Length: 246
Image (cartoon, rainbow, N blue to C red; front, side):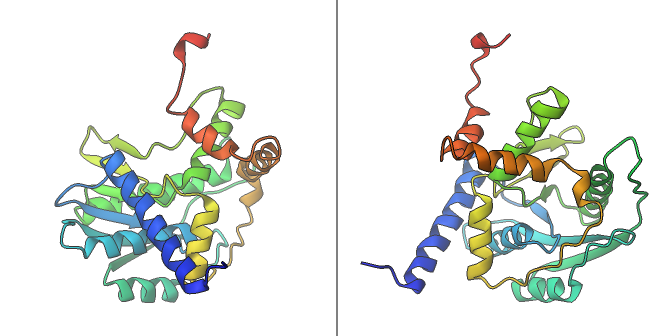
């Protein structure tokens, strides 16, 4: 029997929220009285993260607060509908802090353009978190981001590192969390479709300066050998056999 659209959406949403909840509890991402700043780029991942955390915060058992922040870089042509983001936050009853920064990005720099831009946006998010007295920053990275970061680290840096679900920073006074870590890129895409998120225009002139897209393509090719490659690579980060390594 073919499942109707409404039932399929309901089951999907239940599973999506369940996976976020599992990440929160497995990694102890959220505690009572937390004030969490959610970085919102306007893309599907950050919007899904904000909505889920905001809706969870309304439950009687949850005792945390959510604030959203959007950081725009004025000299990078990445088009985002700021009004849509503001309306989205208003519907959720979440305060939105918007900040515009300028950063020096050059193709011939010693460091990748995307790294410099991301670093400056992250620095601004930390500053906003401090201003708002938030003790945690939530980012919308998912499982596929973590897998790609693992491969990039191994291939280009010669290290085994990725995106931890929880990272203590500044001598333990601040924590970075990634509640979507058990979800795939396809799942956040499907969530955005069900929720009818407005698609933003991604038009960054420096997006080819990173190897992430190439690594994502490599992972897709690997799936021809094993359809479970993403899940296996993710699981491998918690299943390291030190005795079999040099």
